Length: 369
Ligand SMILES: [Zn+2]
Figure 1: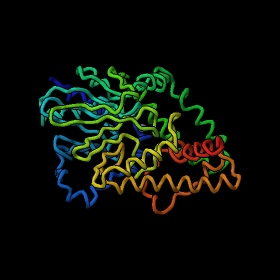
Figure 2: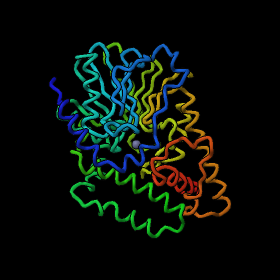
Figure 3: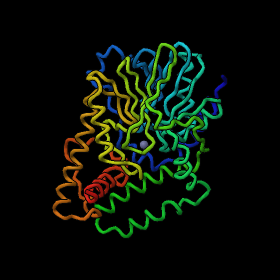
Figure 4: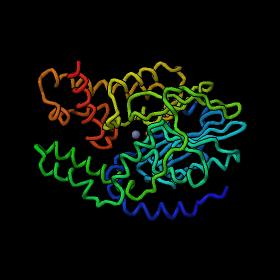
């Protein structure tokens, strides 16, 4: 198959110049090295197949490869992903932020296998996992996703296309002017950076929708690639469209954004549920003790990574509960959370995408009780 790689590079170079708001976020977010315990993990190749800075791809199992992004070095991919290679077919994970990101992953797959590609999966609808879908569409690769992903892409990103950026950013700029405190203003500024970044990608991307919907009532579902079986499962928590890819025989899991490793979890989605997400993480913690996790964002890790994100949720819930019991209103509580020393190196994509909504959603859950 002929792949438009030269196009990808030009597109990447053209795009990076207009992404100042990303660098405001990304400069804070260097990817940590592989943890020491993974350096002795027999499944993992210590040398990546390829390292482009913005992402590297390495073998992490038998026919199993992980794409790990470093947000601080570019926005071509942003999220993690990977691919699977059996005896009969290959399977790709994630549509990434740009067509160039999807193309990079496909090119790397083709350096190890010429087998037909059974599909490419968006683990959920969010822009950084789906705006590169058009690459797969253009190359005739079936695009798999949770059945509601197509609608969520249309509902959330079409309104950002063909409009002046003020239509999208105006309300946040007004909120910054009207902020009641410096803390609230600083938090809203991080939201403005994040929404500016999402707008820049969504307004300049050609949207491409999944054509292989996965009905969640029919999951889990096995995908036989020939001597390598992937199991697709659906869990609540991050976006209402989340699909996880498990390789049960090798104890490897691609979690999508149900797991942010070493980051504050992004909870803003209208379908995100904090209690549901914490239950999901409890299930991940009950997977085999040697499970290797490919998180949606952050470095590869074992169960210690799941323990760390559960601690972050516990800390947010603990601080929120004290404020709830003390009668602090939700609007105020969402800005009062204090990042403990332990998590001070955990990137916060934007306050209003992570900690703020986690607290207001917890309040809403407690109020319903
Ligand atoms: Zn997401």
